[in-house]
Length: 570
Ligand code: ARG
Image (cartoon, rainbow, N blue to C red):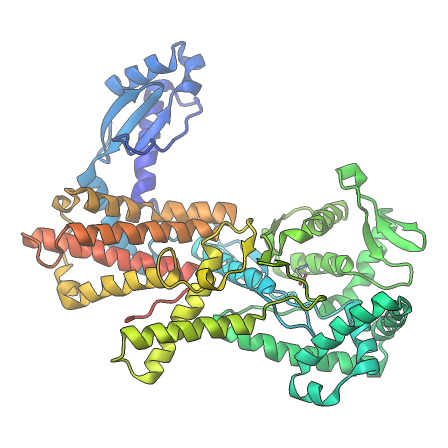
């Protein structure tokens, strides 16, 4: 499937190639704002092959180029060849694509059915899921949808932090300081208190750390009491996490936590030793990586015999390769783990598991206005509180704007809008940036926010309900590209497949979010400037209704890629 925008670009390149020769390197650029052109081809790379200045080449091309049906005119501008679309044919093509593809409009076959494993969310057992894990969950879920839409077969795996030395800490603290009543009432809250207390106590008495290490070893060696307690911690945590996943409507294909790899690490360690990749260093087993430019070695096994997060991640990657045969594995994890993933990928390549794209899809921190979050210091905002607050605020809004809805309908709209607001506040920003945690911004119900986009959808649907749905039958008439507002909307709709491709390419959900915001603005401009249902002629009315229907479709699809739902009323 070649979309109209893509077809027009290819036609432009082809037209120039016919003159300049098949083997010259050509690229396309976007003309600067204010220039009356839709595409530009820089002629600088042609200068050497054609023995002329870029300006001369652009002028010659503008005179001689033969344009196909999608392109209307060519002009030279400095060293650029500027091209404009043939509006009628272009618009008919775009609107035909939208009409034919419906909810699949914008879908790509870039993935060719290949598998991509997406490792996301991955909160740690016995702690509350914090806003820090919210980013991974939301970004990961968006990348899952994006890959599915682009022809991949995504596999989502929640790599729960359910193993490791922190359980030694917890087991020690549990035995030393447990408040039974508090634990019965709020197990996760009590475990978190124990975790924080341990940190404070161990600052005063470092010998506690040795005792915690003992507990960890006991757990790794299968001590039944340690195991039973650990199981209990996992069970409590999973139940708490699931509540949040249900609210967010996030699902995983697998939840294979770190403990799943307990019996799969031996093989990794053996292989690394046998191949001389791992060496002894003061009793520990390490993999030196200076030869690939990484100064810090990866520790495979500590001197006390304990395995590490690293070791489990090695076993995990190998298991995924053997089980799912992916072409890519994405790790949606904060930028603070950059070194970890550099070491991991480098070690996997040394071990001979390099035949796959490993990608650390990193993201910035969430900071509180007073500084970085830290579970150990107890300085966190709990995700459930954030979600509840968002829904409560959305609920007040619905109460005010839609008093006619029934109570369950109001609840449902409040959930879609409140959760959407939270997801969008994250996904509309470039993921690599740090986010300063800000209630008002996160929950803003207007401006560049999910509620504004949802409202745009509701408004478009309202027009269609009022008289549009049937009126839309028939071909798109070019007469409805006559005003700047109409043409802007056609261009925006035509651009959606390219936006999907760009978001996929960089693993950037914000590209979709920012596009949807621009589409919403174009729609509101259009609605303000031209009559739709009251248009002068039947053809004009029909075609404008089709534009409205296109906006509704693309808005719903695009928000769906971000994991954000749309209400029918708000
Ligand atoms: N549980 C880890 C943490 O919260 C994240 C795990 C990410 N995935 C992975 N394969 N390492 O820091």
